[in-house]
Length: 470
Image (tube, rainbow, N blue to C red):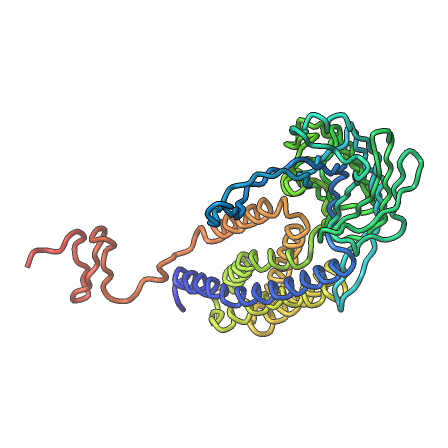
C-alpha cells in the first residue's frame, strides 16, 4: 500500500485535474446564458425596450440679420474692362432657437409588469402611464437675444423625447391650461413627440399624459429647475441606477415606490440656452430603475461551477479519509468518475432549471448526485457502512452550496468557512498519520544527513552516530 502522504498528493493532483471538465461546464452555462439574454433583448425590443423620458423643452425659433460678403462683376464703361468687386448684403435668416427648460417638472410614473415567453425563456416586460405637470418662465428668453434678432413666439413648440415612439401605447395627450393640444411625432428623426403651441407667454400649466410599453429599465432626466419624480410598480426587485438615487423608497413583496427631488444646481443644465442640451442630459443626468431579476439561475449555476472544485476536493478528501487502511485504495479512475459526476451535477441543474425552475431543479440534481455517489461508494469503492458518511457529507455540501447560490452577498463567507472547517477536520483526523509510510527493509538514509543511521552488518547493530571515515 502506498504511503498516506503519497496518496494525498495523488488525490490533490486529481482534484486539480477536475478544473478541465468544470471549465467546459462553465462554457456551456455561458452559452445558455447568452442565449437567454438574446431572448430577453429580442422580446424587450419588440415590446418597447428600455424607456428614457427626457423633456419637456420649449423651443422658440429665432430670426435675425445675417451679413454676407461676396463678389460681383463690374464693367468699366470707359474701358470696357470687367473687374471683381466685393459686395456686402444683409438678409433676415433663421438663427439658433432658444431652448427653455421648465421651472417646475413633476413626473409620476406607474407601471405594471407581466411575463412574456420566447421558447423556454420568460422575459419581464411592463406597461405604464406617465403623467407630467410643468410650466415655463418665458421671460428668460429675451436675455439671450442678439442685436437685431427676433423671437418668433407664434412658432414656438414643445418637445418631449422618448427612447422609441413605437413603445407609446394608450392615451397620449397634452393640455395647456385645460385646452387640448394635438401631438405629433418629432420630424427630425429622433424619437419623441412635439406640439405646436402658438404664443406660449400667457400659458400657465402644462399637463402631458403618456401610455407606454417597456422592458428591462425605466429612466428619466431632471429637466426642471425643480424636478420631482415618483415611480410605482408591482415589481418587487427594483435596482435603482443612474446619476441620482431616490430620496425615499419602499420595497415590499407587492412592489415598490420611489421618489426623487432634484434641484437645478444638481444637474449641469442651463434653464435657457441657444444650444440643445438634451443629449447631455440623457447621457450624464438620467436616473431610474432597472427591473432586476434576482438570483438568475444562470449566474447561480456559474457560481456553482466556480465553487465546484472546492466541493470536488472535499468529496475526494472524504473518500480518502474514510476508505481506511485495509484493502485496496481507491483507484485514480474512480476519483475521476466521482469528479465527473459532480461536474455533471451543474449541467443537470441548469437543464432542469430551464424547465421547472431553480429550486426543484437543484433539489432533484443534488439528490440524484448524492444517491449515485453514495451507492458508488458502497458498491464500487467497497466502503460498506462508511458510505453513509460520504452520503451525509454530500448532503451537507449541497446544502451549503444552495445557501451560497441563493445569497451572493454571503457566498464568499460560506465558502471560505466551509473550506477552513474541512481543512481543520482533515488536520485532526490525520494527526497520528505516518506520512512516510511504514519503514522499509534495508538501510534508511537520514533526512538531510542527520539523525540515526542503522546499517545491519553480520546481524549485529552498528553504533549509532556518524559512520567511520573510510
